[in-house]
Amino acid sequence: MLHPILALFLLCGLSTVSSLDNGLALTPPMGWMHWERFRCIIDCDNYPDDCISEQLFRAMADRLAEDGYLEAGYEYLIIDDCWLATERDSEGRLQPDPDRFPNGIKALADYVHDKGLKFGIYEDYGTNTCGGYPGILGHLETDANTFAEWGVDYLKLDGCYAATEGMEEGYAEMGMYLNQTGRPIVYSCSFPAYKGLDANYTAAVEICNLWRNYGDIQDSWGSVKSIVNWFVDNQGYLSQFAGPGHWNDPDMLIIGDYGLSYDESISQMTMWTMMASPLIMSVDLRTIEPEFRDILLNKDAIRINQDPLGIPGLLAKKINNVYVWTKPILPQVGDKYSYAIGFVSFREDNPIQIEVTLDSFGLDNADGYTLNNVFDPTDPVTVSVTDPITFFIDPSGGVLLEVNPVGSKKFQ
Ligand SMILES: *[C@@H]1O[C@H](CO)[C@@H](O)[C@H](O)[C@H]1NC(C)=O
Ligand SMILES: *[C@@H]1O[C@H](CO)[C@@H](O)[C@H](O)[C@H]1NC(C)=O
Image (cartoon, rainbow, N blue to C red):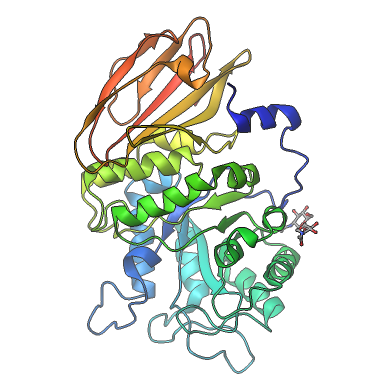
């Protein structure tokens, strides 16, 4: 039983799908975005440290650059909604709220770039953003040029206040104007989230580097589970559209916020790693607890997520409500791939013992595999494909294993 996406990959190299060719997002984008944690806080008098303002983004840029996140791969600092003034300027251009961004967006982008980071911003394809600020409809070319002049490297384009009919064409038109600026800009689309499975996903691959498929994540384990269940229910359809340069996006990592326990944080990191999802944090990096930071910075998890094959993992089985994903990764030895195997308990009662063998996932390297337990590393263990692998998994806990065929050099 070969992993179905790997089978497709080997068959046609997935090259028959024509995809956006801007050279960007060849692995899932990594960064930080304000929405889930900071929302639309615009009252800087009462919430000076948390309001959507240039101080907040400068502070986060400092933390990204100085606390190991940039080094680990989290390179995009992305402003979400509520940065805009309520009106365009006298020449019809977008402008930020003057009180909260007194130095303008260009100066903020320069600050972010000086830290070695890339700069992302939010807009909306419709007449208004979801927060009610001016949208881009009727101003696509002007706004694409404004973003390029400011030094934007990543655009999240939401879909509030827009007709869903014709959205694909509208997003394509904006993509054309972005391309015409000559500035490489990661293009994150939202029409699939607004149109559901009626969205033209072939068009999404052609137009966008990534796209939100589903509703916003909220700060709870229940929200994480509902998103994952939707992706699992539709994985056979969705996974065919993901690959280098074009990704499904189940929304931000909420690790380190109020809603997830330590175990649940490992579980979210495990699932986002397995699904080859963008790793976009939304957490206060000034106050995050070190144990949560360590989850976000786990080198092996990030390497698996960023694997150059870009094959999204698929749920292979459920064992007593423990979900098990497999994902082919490098390195390979001959025709034997390495694999990541992610286990996440959706149970709410007791921990249980898991016992699996690698051959039950179709792995068949005769010399066996070396085993790496990503969040609980031990000395390397070698297992044959019929050796039982056993461990306990907590309710809502996660275990991420990496297995490399014996004889492979660990991929760097
Ligand atoms: C614009 O599109 C062309 C054709 O797909 C591509 O080769 C080029 O890299 C794109 N440029 C930018 C800046 O995205
Ligand atoms: C979906 O988009 C593709 C690529 O742009 C296009 O060829 C196809 O006709 C579209 N399908 C529908 C049903 O509109």
